[in-house]
Length: 340
Image (cartoon, rainbow, N blue to C red; front, side, top):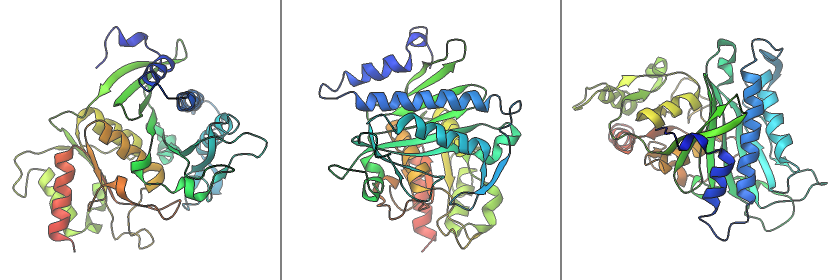
């Protein structure tokens, strides 16, 4: 997907070129996306030094999800907040690490956008040098003025104006969509800038992989079990896919986007406190669904489009199937047939 011409297009230049397609654009969204890119550079500088700096391990605290807060989690959360709270571009924020919405300090101007983010997805893998990432989505506020409210944050995925993720691995990549397709940028550490490396990303027509934590299979419904066997070439399938699973959602979805296939994290019976599975609707499912669908794929709860779910809680969880449209539709078929 790379070419000589694209290697010289910085993310800043690309965002401004995209803005030119919308004559009425104020440039605020463009600036906000660049704020996120800058945050990604700072977070990447820490993840690549994690083994050398005192930023590995847990802080000793738990987040609202009941999970141990990793030191890099906290750093990523603070970095995103501190780079965006004062700009006048945002009305309110929400983070997977915070129980409530994050207000913009009253001393700063209020903006028209809302930012929701998972500061460091896959942070339980940090100590093992496995790829982790940042996931984000941007909405326009619903309220007209003043400080942003919970109503501004609890929006459907269909209301997203831009979304994407950063993946910190052997290289750092930023992938985003803003209603005009999906583009990927790789951080060149020699110049400290994201350069366009994957223009106009589309899901491959021939899928290669299915990605799921198959260790939980005994907790799945009959429909999910049969669907998984279909992906493996059984249940009347005419093809079979290879299993790949990392355990960092951002890395698994990134591979699905570039290689084709399906990623899913269904509901299971393992934890009665989580009847809808593990993934958060606002911070993980909706942003990734937006990117996948902008690249020609589809994202579902197993019973309908993720983008149509009306969120009721900041930390609501949802089953998720995303990737190649045919494969995700097939999951809906199996669930509809076998699971009441």
